[in-house]
View 1 (spheres, rainbow, N blue to C red):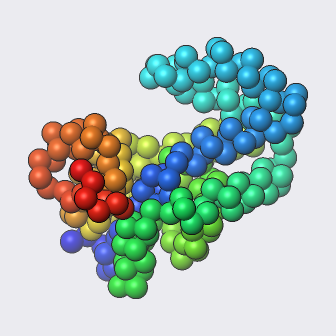
View 2: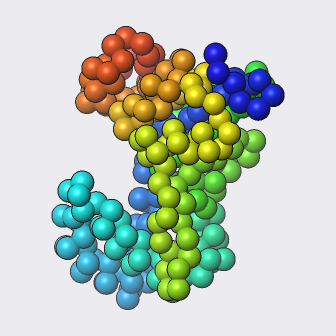
Length: 227
């Protein structure tokens, strides 16, 4: 069993649709894009061109950069952080909690494990969402933004194999003891864990993970009797 600092087992949790329902950063961007009539009009016009790019892997990053520019142009860093906190307060209302995963997370904390939330959601939104879930005690490894001259820019991801690299850069030895996620995108993380858990996976995610890992993982459902 792997360990982090002081020989403690490490438990890594995804955030979106693992601890809280929904795409946190996507929802936050939508709030920003529709904030004010001018920005909303420009966003809706641009969406006709950007949405098709988003659904094509070779051009997805270009679409994300376009939406991020539209959402954050003219927004100072301090205001961006305030908006992230306001969004997180609403986004983490109790009906959005995924109790089965949150219970596991708190059990790891109670056991003295090192608990890390590793997410493609960008900071400071990811950290604000964790605070909204009452997870001030966990470490957060998230995608990174940088304030440019006029807007925020994406500078570092935390998805797929990049997530495992980011964990290693945070001083976490691989394999980790426990990994929890809903998504087959996190197969590199699951493969880098001794104990693997899928939270409320879709049938497609379940098939993809099963194709790679066989039966070497456990499915946890928030609604007993599903799947």
